[in-house]
Image (cartoon, rainbow, N blue to C red; front, side, top):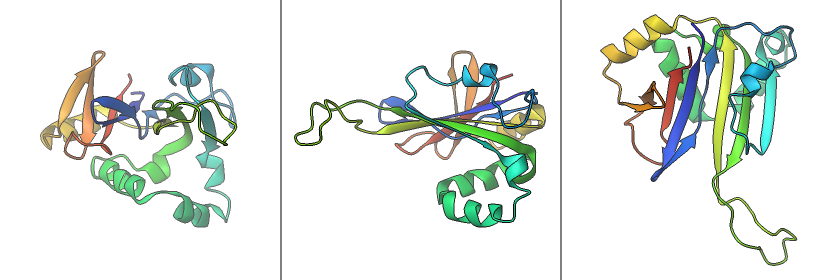
Length: 171
């Protein structure tokens, strides 16, 4: 089917984080469809896009991947692989953005009236997957879950804590 959405939470506030896996192919490479862009929060500050299918064909890609991917996401990739999702071959495009958690008051001497107190991350990974078998695996593993807006969110970890990652299939 179509997608996974990843959400983490810090304290009482939910932090959007991780990876969204979606099946629809974009109309053309190098462009992200407005339907995918619409999944991101309206107050997104920074936004990025990568055509991983094209990037993997470049000889510099593996070195860049080694330098840029945080250990937490490497662990998440292994976790997904255990459920039958191979991020290195099935993820064709990736988009992500940063959302400020909150703003502080004016910072003296910084020339800014407000600065972010933290960031939330939300991402979408487009590719070809089998969500039913993946969800069945997660249910069998009895992952911590919670319901939000009609979706079952699966935890990558204990299901609580500031750095927790949650994900789900969009459709």
